[in-house]
Amino acid sequence: MLFVADSAKERIQTILKAQDLDDNYFVRVSVTSGGCSGLSYKLDFDNESQPNDQVFEDNGMKVVTDLKSFLYLCNTTLEFSGGLDGKGFYFNNPNANRECGCGESFAV
Image (cartoon, rainbow, N blue to C red; front, side, top):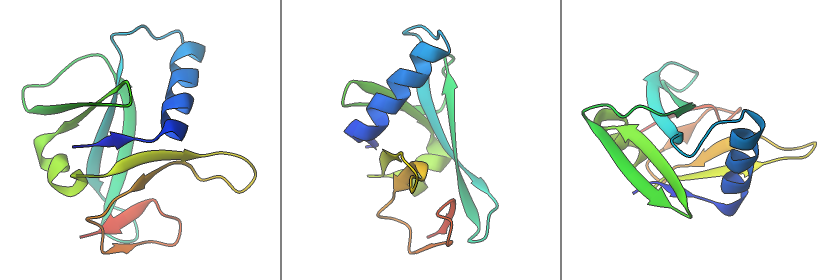
């Protein structure tokens, strides 16, 4: 399961509305090679499903990931932090055993 915190839900809804994206759009999360620690998160809006997509609904939000990425993301919560000290979107990933200083990459 992938989870969406209230803070991330509010920000996602704001972005979808600002970009005039309809209800067919969802959050696509994936893991790619790269970054200081070896793996990086990727977050996009999408409206097309792929054959091996894993689909989750939490907190009224649809979150989709590919099967390979899900192995790294299982039980991860998408969060958002705003303000002067804010990180923007970030992932609270219980599977990560190391993260880089900026929080944009991780290792398992």
